[in-house]
Image 1 (cartoon, helix red, strand yellow):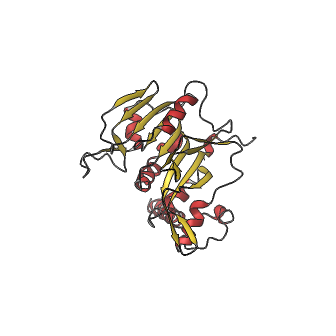
Image 2 (cartoon, one colour; image 1 turned 45 degrees about the horizontal axis):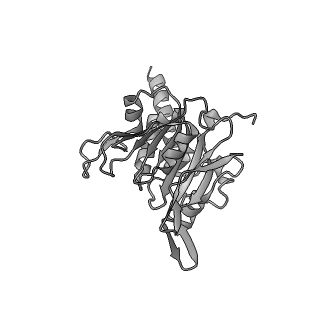
Image 3 (cartoon, one colour; image 1 turned 90 degrees about the horizontal axis):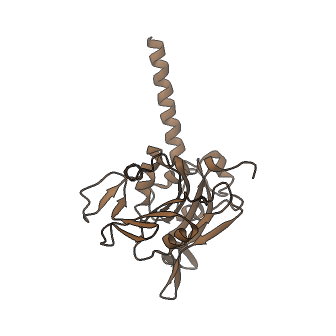
Length: 266
């Protein structure tokens, strides 16, 4: 009995150690793909730039940008790239479902997905609007995406985890064709919670504006990419800065599809 308990303890400690290393460092299968990365991961800003601008060029045969608009005639923002390969594309049989976090005053992506044939649940606690029906297939709610269900946010917002919202709207066992996240830096905490809860299992594609400013959460993206393939990374020119002759983008538009839906025979 003692020997059995000791063995279990060793196994649990081993799993914890593997997870910790996995979280902190680049997975071996990604080292070749990410080129010049060295351990420990993201030693400097150049490493982080290389990581976030990398994408698997061969992962998606058919990509398309949805939504977006020009601001001050200087830059284009709000567009998201989806993969339209037949096995991972949003459903075209009337069952397409979108969860979209972060609207601000730009409904172009949501409108484009409605035209595509999707039902869109749009969320944003920061624009001062109560829940309403925006159009035939777009519904707005004043919840924000958070790492916990928070009723005491300093700004008076109502934050919910993705799992809580999926359960609230009756989509626990449904496929979410696209999860859009554009929440101005809060994506890291929300992503960690979603990875821990397993709620992303039924999400086909994720499109996310990533803010390349924080050191603590990069490991979450490596964990995400054990089950999701990054097929697009585009600079967001609404937030760039120039350091001597180098232009860095601290906002990037990243897109992934869920490998669980990938047809290996394509």
